[in-house]
Length: 318
Image 1 (spheres, rainbow, N blue to C red):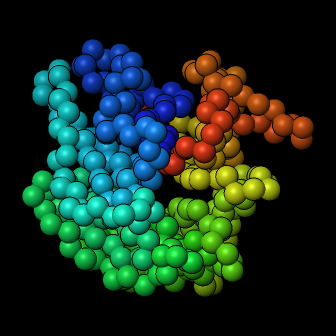
Image 2 (cartoon, helix red, strand yellow):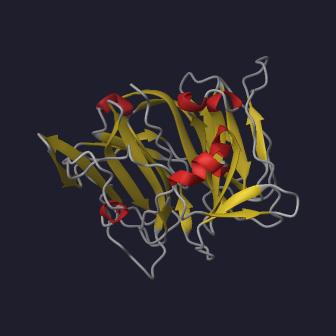
């Protein structure tokens, strides 16, 4: 998980994340810190992404809301791995506030050597390589004050041409390219936080912990276990859908992990493995809290509004 200062927080069994020193042993988690400038006490970071290739993390990227984008690539040379920072150019602009740049996505068709960046007005830019210049991929369409664009989901891309979706804070879903049209719940206030593609449709979540599924017209409803949360206040920040073949017997290997701004983790389906005895044995330092209704969640002990994004990496068994 990424916090607003640029710090990374590891949760779960992450031995497959990367062996930076080449000794086949999980490195001290502190090695994953310092990949990006640490800005405390300024809360500026908004998003974090990993690029997976050949069953390993090859690169990571973090974005600050004022337009700064930091990339780090892991270059394997024999038994050693070197870190290549800023291997993709940033946007080359600094905004006056930290709520303009909303999300970044690696371009999987460029071997992780390019990214797309979503701004609050709905505009999307693509940047490739260390000397690349921003290319406009999607023109602005959203009201950044009342209904900003908050999430970009890509089905496929070719250069700066995108097929996918952009979610706004009121729940409107803009279709890009030839992607099937999705229509979900909308609100008259900006409450939505994230959207993730799954099974020909998508899952949406609002800040209060309500989850929704959307599919193209005429398609079957999605079969996915959703977290049953009701925070009462807007604290949910981000979520990811977990598809873990190693736990196929556990809700079909599909589940959701959601994080709040306070650093609590909430799960459903296969992600509930985190809360089993076996799951907790891998990270005995995690604090599991049981609610009055018997449901459980993980509390990282952060207790203030600072967590901004979560990424999941599942090591596949060869």
